[in-house]
Amino acid sequence: MSDSGPESFEATPRDSSDASFLRAEVRIDLDAIRHNTARLVEASGSAQVMAVVKADAYGHGLVESAFAARQGGAEWLGTALLDEALILRAAGDSGRLLAWLAIPGDRFEECVAADIDVGVSTTWGISDLVTASRSAGRPARVHLKVDTGLARGGAFNTDWPALVKSALVAQSSGEISIVGLWSHMVFADKPKHPTVTAQIATFNEAVELAERMGVTPEVRHLANSAATFALPDTHYDLVRPGISIYGISPGPEVGTSSSLGLVPAMTVVGRLAQVKRVPAGQGVSYAHLYVTSGESTLGLVPIGYADGIPRHATNVGPVLAAGKVRTVAGMVCMDQFVLDLGNDAASEGDEVFLFGPGTRGEPTADDWAIACDTIPYEIVTSVGPRIPRVFRGGR
Ligand SMILES: *Cc1c(COP(=O)(O)O)cnc(C)c1O
Image 1 (cartoon, rainbow, N blue to C red):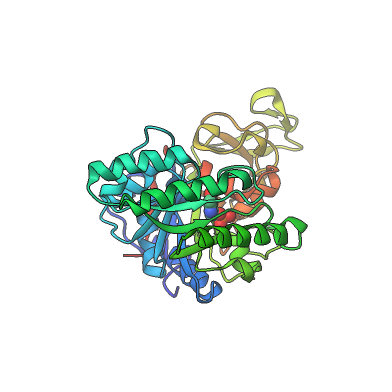
Image 2: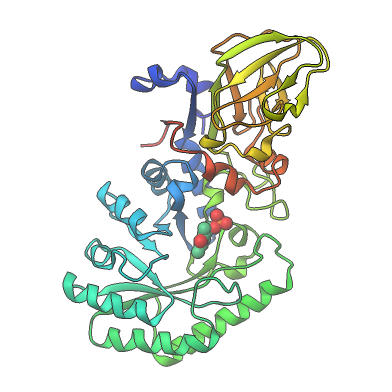
């Protein structure tokens, strides 16, 4: 981590991206992702680590982030969509890889051919994978998912034996290989919640039932980031951290980013497009929801809700500008918002920091989540593709 930190962004010459940083950029510190992954490897004990890189690696850039996580020691990568896993294969990743959110008609055959494991919750999923296996000429590798109480994906208790049975039938004819048994937590970020022990017990029963029926799983897995840190009983053979790979705490009851030894990897920077003096009593932005208290300098930040800045940041979103943390003045618009810089000096083209690791005094994604009444997951994944990602470190 010696060469990471915001200063080194300026120190590192950027070729093509230099010219394009006119309006805004998202700086991704791949050394931080590598460091965080190594930290998860440490926290998971003897279990392997699957770095979850769904949703463009939580907005951090799928391929670059995935490679950094591999360097940090992730033996597995996990995606929601089959499409996301196929992008990783096309980019040259050849390690263990699981995708778990498929719909009928999905790209099963391509995934089987590309050696991608698939999460399956339904008997139609088994049938589709059997068909895919015949076309691809090799067995489909599946992870059978049991619903232990989240009531989202997964086979619910009464459907579990039928799912296991259909997978075993397909395995005996060589079309499927049952690699994993898995489930997902409801309240891992509230480690003392009563559903936690209930879910672990239900998972153990489901695994035992499958084993009695003849399954010999290579990996059993249940833990997300919160469970990896707070619930060692959920580690089994493999853990699936996502948000912590990017340096963000999964929740205040689990710890802070720094108490968990994590380094936030994303910094969102904009440049002031216009700076002007206005009198006291001036209403600012649509609906004049902010009014200047004295004569003041307004700075226009050319980033808006079309870039993923929540409209809920209106009058509350924190931004480091002209040496101080300010709050957004008035309404966040589609492409822009305004800051009241008071009487501090600022020029057009100056950098302002929406959030980052906090090392230069800028707010964090956690600060934005609190201000906007959401979770930092939504803050980082919402930052849109209109703002270019600039990578440093890694590879
Ligand atoms: C997103 C996701 C994870 C990662 O969760 P974090 O809270 O980001 O660590 C793990 N498993 C599944 C099934 C997921 O959908």
